[in-house]
Image 1: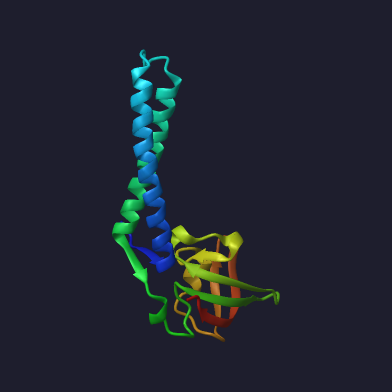
Image 2: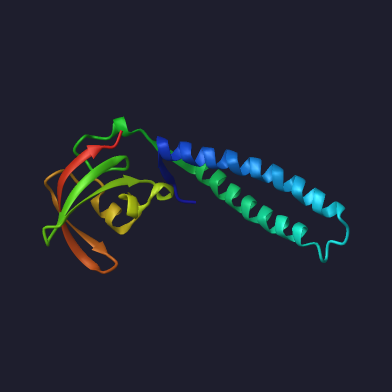
Length: 156
């Protein structure tokens, strides 16, 4: 399994989600027991619904546990100030002069609509290790694009 890179905030978010899912699992176990007591399981919609939901919850719990177990937590204070890395925010300008700002985060923390991109994404991986004022060509799904790194700041 490849390493999962997380900021401290991302690790905390996954840990809280895991705790909530464990509580939900306990409640679903009770729901399944109550539904089982109602008799014939073949036509018991409550039972089948709770069992299906339990499967989804258990699947998510397993994924989160695997990620937390293999996670490498990045301490933002260890990142050089002018180098693009997980835990930094980078302002870039494309060849059309359009400027955008992204925070580089682990895969589970990414939300491009909120300006957070994964270091495993094409743009994120293309910017990793680069410094302010560098121009970099990044291979995106739509083809190669050139970006100038205007500014790099630690997120923390």
